[in-house]
Length: 201
Ligand SMILES: N[C@@H](CCC(=O)N[C@@H](CS)C(=O)NCC(=O)O)C(=O)O
Image (cartoon, rainbow, N blue to C red; front, top):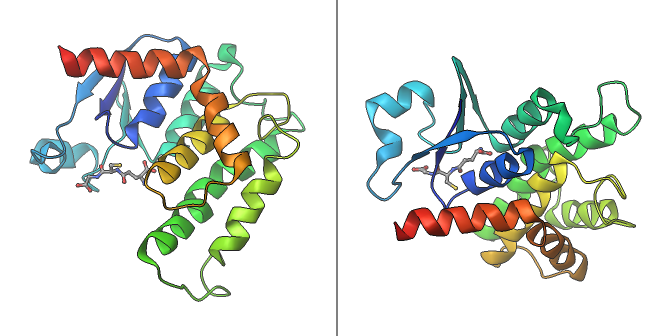
């Protein structure tokens, strides 16, 4: 059974949404970040970074949101959340999945810290260039692959929602609409409801 090490107030919500999109059975291992459960010797054996999300699939451990989503979308192709390896949209799909971790998040950190990284040296360049690239990728939409929803949207719409929530990035209308589209999906609603039920009980 797939196991997600999870805290509803963290980036592991991205994987939680993805698991609901897949409709495969999974188990939640709650991690209390405030109590430091991510730093126990036992947890550090599965992720020496001391961070969640962690996905455990039998003996396989996957960390880093874009890697976990890519792994799950490929492993469960019936859900149709990843273009096939030889499909023409595969390149665009991988491009944005990797862009999230290698450009979007670091640019968001620059914006959050109100600092300027040397744009021609760092791999993500200027935050405004990153934001404009994401805006352009969302046109015409509704998803990164046009009419086709994919795991890259679970990643990007969740990440944009997270950064909007913390007021790290500007409220561009295309970002807000994109996040709303993800939130309107039954899987996102089910993930939020499951988190609320676990927190209440
Ligand atoms: N690069 C990781 C980021 C994971 C991450 O930053 N997790 C945070 C929660 S949002 C965490 O576990 N923080 C706990 C800590 O550092 O003590 C990914 O993409 O999954």
